[in-house]
Length: 280
Image 1 (cartoon, helix red, strand yellow):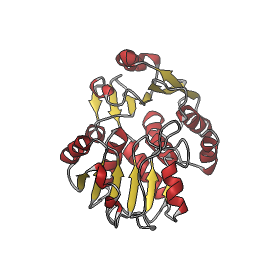
Image 2: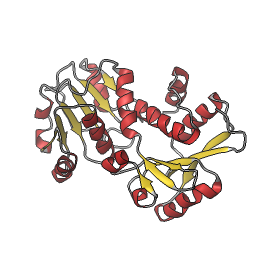
Image 3: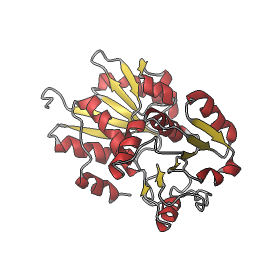
């Protein structure tokens, strides 16, 4: 697919933003598909977000991604929000329509499930109890993705119990909020453990969670990708659990955004993964 009449533009709005791997990722796909264009890091502070979003059509942007701290605030700044983004309560993608209006989308749920399936092709959400640690923005996308994939029991644990209880009420279904003190007991008979917190990220303290009660067959997932192996994943790997880090989620959530902007659904190739891994 070609766009001979214009130079294609998209970008990432956040603050800070220069650490992001998204420009390298999208620019790889633009080059791979022979498209003339670029994807830019856009350092936008909170008080400038509305003006920056409204400038996208006039500047010729097809859209943009959103990262911290804009994913929630932008919900009230676009013309339409798709139902999935509304359920998650955050958006990570803006698409500029032909008439210049803005639509908010969220591809984190898609990215998470695709990353798990890539690593574990036989994975099923309904195979047994799933333990999710954390109740922030990352948790919301993961929880919605698990519910939509047919999970039958999700044990949600958060250091602040009120936040987990709020998600249980809001998202419903198989989600059950448990007390932080019960986090290790919750691992018994679980088939999957997911960390959605920032604990274990570079510069953050490790997640306080002993894995003794977790079956060694359980899949352990962390949505963090810097470092590629968090202390949680290292501990799980050493005891024999299969593990998945957050890099696949980053790579796969970008695919439907690229398609929404440029009309091509790109693939995550070994070359692309190696290129991004070399920067983490």
